[in-house]
Amino acid sequence: MIIYRILLLIAPALLRIIAPFDAKLRRFRSLRIGEVERVRAAFRNRPDLPVLWFHAASAGEFEQAKPIIESLNGTEAGKRYYIVASFFSPSGFDAGAKYPGVDFIFNLPLDSATNARALLDAIGPCAIIYAKYDVWINLTLEAHHRGVKLFLVSGTLPEKSLRHRFPMKYILRSTYASLTGIYAISEADARRYRAIAGPRCGEIESAGDTRFDRVRQVIEEHAKKPLEIIARENGLLYFLAGSTYAISESKLLEAYAAVHAQRIRLIMVPHEIDPKNIDRLAGLIASRGLQPIRYSQLAPPIAVDGDQVLIVDAFGVLAHLYRQADIVFVGGSFKGSVHSVLEPAVFGCPIITGPHICNAYEAITMAHNGIIALCPGMRELAEALDRLASDPAKREDIGRRTKAFFDDNTGATQIIVSKIAAHL
Image (cartoon, rainbow, N blue to C red):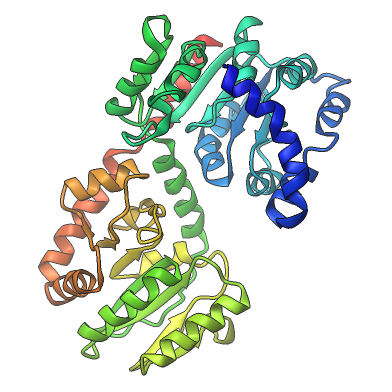
């Protein structure tokens, strides 16, 4: 705890020094100026309902909280709780501002004991629910001291995480032991939480990952207004490369060129869609003798002809494309951490990805079960793409097993909500 207190003492000064030179840090700091007073002002007229406080590091983790919020509050008798959400990152705060299921949102200030006491005095929650991993030490210990129920949902503690190694293991021991319930995504994660928390720990169980339920919710919403982005032609296969970065795009284009044979069409959805990055990608495609075409300049359904490569330069399209794709590459996996494989999995898409998947338990499990192709380089990408494209039976079998894996892992929300409700 001494190390943690020292970090908290120097962090404000470091932010003041560094923030002027970094736009993201500048916004991070500006969002926290006066935030405690804003919370106090908002709760001077306290709601009549008991308060549930959800905390998520960022937008992705908040997605895991949404099914729980909706299940706890979605009764025919009306709202049972006043929902508060706090965030660490600006992107999480932006996502929370767009979500109608929350009554009040704020940016969590740095985790000093003074801030923790002030926020708890103002909000007076009956429970705090952390999503995935972002458990704050002083806030947790002070809330535990006051008798507030504390939960970690869809908790994940990867084998390579520093949280169960020296010194973090000992810094976090009393924090995890103070939680009322830790509901991990797998039994392996639950075991690692128990090893840190020790014999004083509360309820630590494997309950599954609410992301499966959330992805299904989102897909069902999309299905109400399906968007046909590409024009299907008999005999053509669509290879969708989603959330790509520069480090993977050259490999993907080389692999595609190696097996193209006029039977496959490539769609690329870069992670960053700012004009500069789109121009760079278009230039890279053209340098390979292919013709880049842009989604924003065309009207769907789009026919991708011959040597054309479709660049999707718009938000909100990827989920619709997964429904139409035959083979999918999921990006981030050459950059260090794979993006979500769940969106293509719900549609039963055969998935190819790069070598770095240790951040995603579901990707590791799917690879272990032989339903994701891990490709460390261009040659392996080309081989995996050719194997799936040339063997319809194999493509169908992997797609069926991928869909079954997704379906078998839904239902975590119901399990977790029943456990939380038993404590409230």
